Length: 258
Image (cartoon, rainbow, N blue to C red):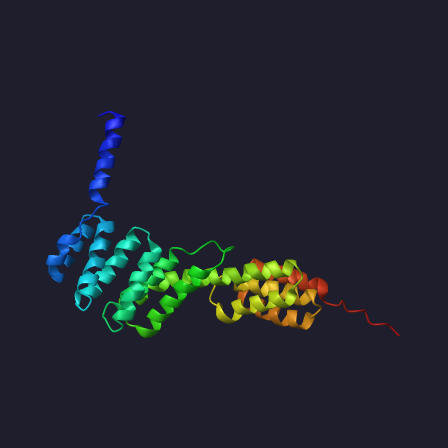
């Protein structure tokens, strides 16, 4: 087969799998059950775009059917698989608002967390998606502590907390370089108070010591250093702090002999 024919064949297959002119008129004569079956078949075939349209049509035709809940969840799943994240969020949120006690609410909360987790940006950028993911997972954990999705989300929550702690340290370094030590200290304290289980704590402590030293608050620096040495003595940040404070401590004058 020539390259030209191969390209044409692939294009035909793609068009067949995802029709742009889906005729929804025939659905008006079908029951909610039959419409759901057609949408499920489209999902099974990997035609998520058409499946979403069918599920949305089911919701329009049968707004009070119990099957609309399933259709909303499926619409969210299809949009997620197509990486239409905004549409997926809308579908899951509508489902939760219209069916607040449905057994699938834990799943919807998990998916909302996952959708935002997958959009988590690099640490230098705004962490809106990180915050949202943590919020959805937090609601899942507090409302449904026994749910299987709590276990599934635990590793993501750890990563999200690492990201938030790292962002605070990044912001602190920004302020520190500009000698805005008060702002830097505020951000570093957030790490020590809210993200004490993350890998960024030793650096946050060292940066805090640096800020206190720069402000001439040696006693405060020593207090933080004591905690750093006690809990993270083998970390390189502890070594940096020891060297820094060694240079700041007053040297003892030799006693005069009579």
